[in-house]
Image 1 (cartoon, rainbow, N blue to C red):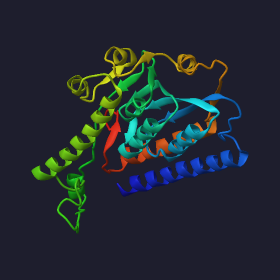
Image 2 (tube, rainbow, N blue to C red; image 1 turned 90 degrees about the vertical axis):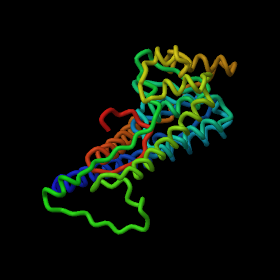
Image 3 (cartoon, rainbow, N blue to C red; image 1 turned 45 degrees about the vertical axis):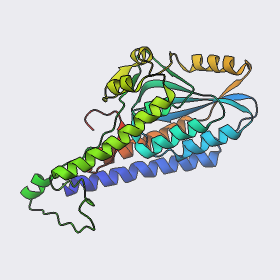
Image 4 (cartoon, rainbow, N blue to C red; image 1 turned 120 degrees about the vertical axis):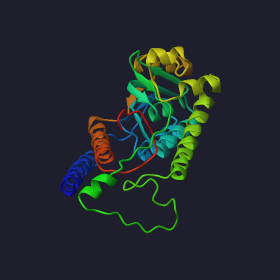
Length: 288
């Protein structure tokens, strides 16, 4: 067990070091700068598991203040992720003065869907995986394993719930109630924010919000999203909405930046899957 954890820790460090080096190269080369010289539609990407959205939040705020940017398209290919960073981007989009369109790709589920619904228009492919409205929290109980190899957990804590959930023991009934109450709280926040943006009754949404996923086609029929379409359709519709046809389409990401995001995502997933730890997530990930 110790050897496995040691190996995983080293692997994570290597991935992070590579990601940092790539980022330094991008910054030093001046690539990926958000330079917009003419009237444009800006395109951003949200890729992979949502862990940290500070950079995306700053970009959206900056674009909203840029007079040359007339609208923003956010391409989403994400199963969701950590709750707080997800809500940061949802709230940022809700504050935007300019039109924001979300374009779902292979998957935009749970937290990915949460962010998408903040947009003025939501597009998806017929085959897009979306929905998965809900909250999950999962951890590993290694009490029996520790007992077999002669390890006993000793915990000193300031309050009875300070170590809940503990991977070294079963939860009591009251502790399970406490955890379920937290899940319910985050779930209600999810429903609240979807209801702000979709023309759907609360009763109908609750029926759909049991964690199940939908295809893009089903999501349109259920009014969870607006249209079937790609970025090209979104660009045409945004130009028509703005009444400006000669807008440039400016991609504010590059391959190096996308690779950096993927490396950090893989490091985070590796840690969450193989090293026991808890956490509340808006994420679609069977077997998490």
